[in-house]
Length: 276
Length: 119
Image 1 (cartoon, chains in turn red, brown):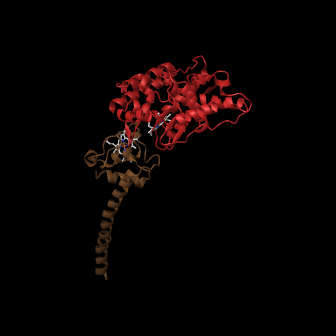
Image 2 (tube, chains in turn purple, orange):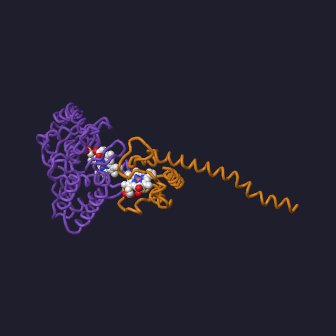
């Protein structure tokens, strides 16, 4: 416990240090090292499996679930939506080719000066073709995202923060700030639960490590009884500490996604996923 | 007349004390019971999410087990401060500032302290 607190303080120190002297890549190496040292039994590539990468008993149950994955229906629904042409005769393929593009997102669009996530791009594709945008948290958009993630399995997470673009760096820093800031009546930062707290028990739940958190979305969560996007999860984690949550695809959550995905650079995308 | 007044003056405080003493004992018990209720309530203290205590079911393990509290916290105020605002002692604490953030009321903080001192 003490050791982890100390290590976290080093991480904090490293974080504030890096704001002055270093860049995202130094942050990422410190972040990765924190988790690989804390969980030496877990091979680095396995962190994409969340809590199941560090908790052998629940991993067993999960491997059984993965034999008849609860997200399969969602992939099928996504495939049907993919194959059905828009009213103008075009389709998603005109925007995304074969759909295996998860590895290209999220990215910083220097022209627009904003972060583009895959979910945002799905709706922009629809709107460019005269279709209504879909809701971001769950439902049809999660299905299409599930299909595209499935097509993209095995791609490497490779977020690029153009270091010569101060606006990109500022967006990254805001995402990082969000991750380390205590918030809500219960006063938790993301890192409190998924950094120093990772591996610990909260009643019956064990807390997963942040490394690899972004790899497997959207997720079929038993508690939800359906699929949800990464930003839906962000909202849930904000609300459970009685903090205000933000809208899926708000600038805040896109910045959070950019930061958190950058932290997992080099790991593989393996979505969609199944979680408790 | 004077004598009577003297008796009243003498007895007065005693008469007032007697029932109050009974009330204080009851109030203590009531506070301990309230403290336990608040500590276990998931919407309030939810202390079990982080602490093993009082044989509560499915305890978390983020914080130390809450045992032998009277021996370990001879100064009641130190214990109260830990519940009211743990960040005072450890600025990186993950324990929520129950009093400071109004997660529970002042009275409930006192009640939890009374309860903890029975553990």
